[in-house]
Length: 417
Image 1 (cartoon, rainbow, N blue to C red):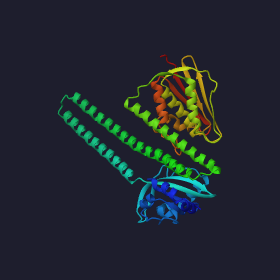
Image 2 (image 1 turned 45 degrees about the horizontal axis):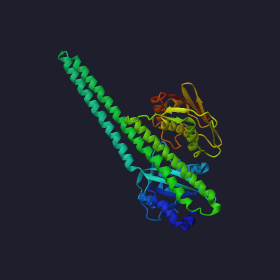
Image 3 (image 1 turned 90 degrees about the vertical axis):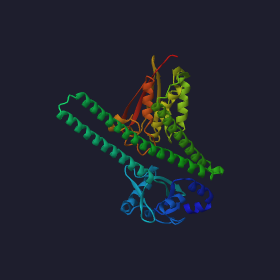
Image 4 (image 1 turned 45 degrees about the vertical axis):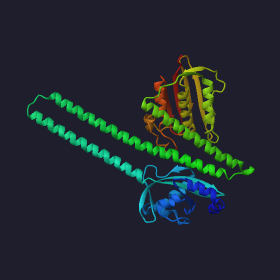
């Protein structure tokens, strides 16, 4: 059926497949390849059209093939988008038998009752080599420290043997050794952050952009009046993914301001009620089916003197997390309680919650709880929120029970101009 549609809509699907820099393959429920773009053919060393009607196992190393069928059937049964190989390395095998590291994202879909899976494949050979070089560089630096430490110890021993009263010099040398070790640790942490950031950008931007491209192309097909529900569905997907990318960019810009020290806050007087309505309006766009956001619609208006944009960023992040990590047909409560000296915001959901052992790390940059790793996210939103609140004289606390929900409480002081 898919091959028939490909033939009938050859121009549109060529745009979709060939515009993507990633390799794209589509398989049916029997794991037979029914579509492949030129990027993936070139990646695996096949001629144009040579992969069509071949079993998917031709692209999988032989030692992974015995278990792949069971994994594939389990994935079809759950029918959800996800990243392959979380927590382990993935490899593909070229036509000539050579293996190479890959990243792969799975996107299931159904056409006229038949199940298919589209996989976006990226060759990460260069990235793996860069990571290897970083590890090699760190090892080299550690060897240098060991050599330097041994040299210092030998010098100290010589001075002691000569009964020279050079205790002060010894202390200076020890201090220099300590500084070198601290500098080495900072350099290792920086390299790890850079690698993690590059991987994060690759994951969090490529998948939504591919989804936008897919929905935009498919939307062009639905021109009949009785197809408007399908058209609206894809337009909704585009809106959600654009909103998600916009939030990521805001997070990156905010964290860059904090790290460079250029984050001067811009205080101004604004309507609290108007801010709440703006946050809720933007959140409603991303609500899942059956989700309901309850908020104070008849609250008394109050003029607040604070950094409006930063407060909006914090509240949008908390509500967005509640929507993302809560299932369909659940309630999300957003409460606002003015006091004499502060405003208290409460965001409470009925979502997956935060595992007890992960709760102490939840505000660390790039950290993601173990039950949230399959959801899209950067792991920097809560870190940014807490840092901004501390700078603004506020605070953030939470309580959470896994599989029952999470409650965040934000307190921000009322300032006077």
